[in-house]
Image 1 (tube, rainbow, N blue to C red):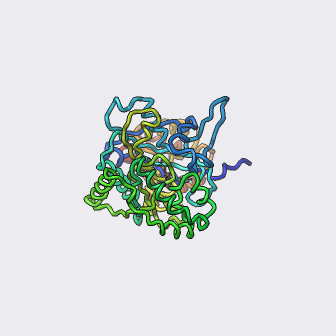
Image 2 (cartoon, rainbow, N blue to C red; image 1 turned 120 degrees about the vertical axis):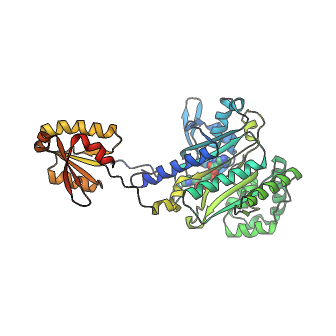
Image 3 (tube, rainbow, N blue to C red; image 1 turned 90 degrees about the vertical axis):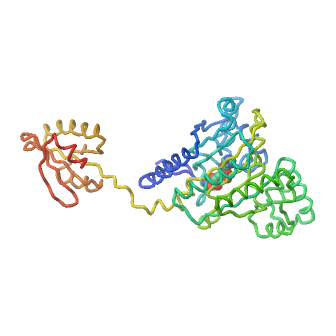
Length: 413
Ligand code: HAM
């Protein structure tokens, strides 16, 4: 018997209804913020990601699902920001509107060691705004993430923000950090000793206790930021406070992808344990240009849907009753007429079903009960002769004959 690939999931009922709720809520909130949906392909040239995320990031080094095709190497997307920037440039979206607000919902793929909240195929609900460096867009983006979480009935989350500054500031931060870590390398974990050679900033968000102690001594604050980036960050913080959004400034928040500049943020939830990020994002003001497009600012974020589902209060709401009307027919003639009745009910948008397994009356009634049906319709020779149908209320057990012509009206009452 075949089994699913490790780190993937079959999403079945009743869980599928929470997915649909979260997706529907997201679409309506995105539309309130004037976003358009975008659906880029799941497969891209691998270079789209290695160029955007950075050659030395964990995702590019270890986690990409690669497909070799003759001379080309494709990748199943590990995230969508790079794809969307590629699509933005290829489709000249800047010519359509100066500011593009795009959202996406879909599967991402990372070759990680599966554990709670960490899968190899997982899903993002994400947003990207391309075409502005205005700090107000940063504020709106964080506020959008907050509105989505509220709509998903999630509370107890924490919004953490930081500013990495522009490319020069990031270089300065790297220099400051390298200088202060130089004499303390032996206190770092082996992985951070590697990071020191290739990607020093990643040391800042290492979870290892001894690395954290070393980093605390480095006294990293905002001293790497230039005046423009400082002003930008001040405006973001002020804007968030004006909207009464609770946030915490975390000077060590750097994120694992190289494209980020200026504002970065992460939204965590304590109950998630080790993988505590519900979502994350930030500015990427150089990426559009680096991938061959115009020089435009951009910002975005993505939630991991599987993690949202671990904490959403929507699961506590009573499931909307799926209560299709169930038709039980007795005899060949009734079965034939029954098909027409089902077609009429469906045309009137009344959910309904019948038995296709040749069940007895008792078995069909049991099937209707299992489906949670409120009404069962019974059609036999007697009913056919009189032009009626028997309607049974499964809750009260009450049963009455109604004219077939009155059926839709009665069910809609
Ligand atoms: P990311 O932090 O890599 O950012 O992913 C965003 C969220 O996806 C994480 O906070 C987490 O909830 C979820 N996630 C990541 N990896 C996994 C996994 N293996 N299993 C389950 N959930 C996972 C990005 O991908 C950026 N593209 C976000 C962004 C958009 N930045 C700017 N625009």
